[in-house]
Length: 292
Image 1 (cartoon, rainbow, N blue to C red):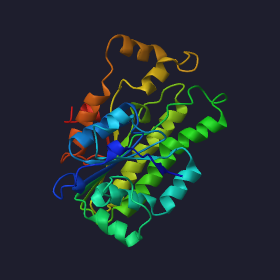
Image 2: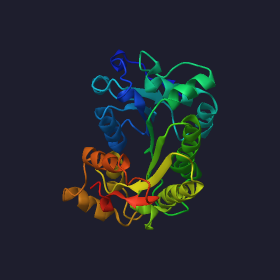
Image 3: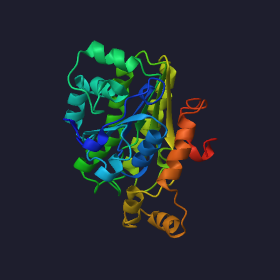
Image 4: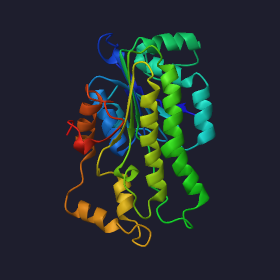
């Protein structure tokens, strides 16, 4: 089950009705890499952010961003995530992040109607499904059932379940946006990445289908950010060539300084996600967007 990280440094200033309290984002996998950069950029823009991850930010970083609330949750743990989403925790946390909680932490158990009314006061809400796994790497026959199931849970089940619960919890908010952090692997097949390719392609198709649903006030995109200098890239570079034949290409990108920094990608990604063109296409590559 989810637990709130507690830190005195997380106490925010009084919310401004026209500023931070009206813009609320959830970022999964916010504790490192691109997720951390996205959360920090949003906080710098005056958003309140609810970060969902197994671990939290270090105290020195938390102290710089009082608009952050963190919930400890293993998104690959399907029973734990399902239980968290089935109760009032998500709506209560969103209400707390929106400014109801004086200490800026996720609110306690409240009446569902009370939480829903508070969230509805937000003018804009955002869900960034960023958490993901590239493992298992290698062809079938050596991937392992547990590793495959964990990848599918984190890369597919969690984003889809969060999207469903988040849409329900934010009913009445006029501007709702979901961005799935996708990959070029969703659109191009790579030897050794059969699980990763399949799970990222699932996010692309989910975005296409949700667009057809025409949910009021909802925009969605599955957005590939390009090759970013994160821990996932380091893991890819350490792959055995017999399991991932293209490992040399990624090693060359790193050696040649061709990887994008998380902060730069986060800035360009959010310029697009928060812009008017977001959602015009269900599937997009950030390198092809005007957010570049």
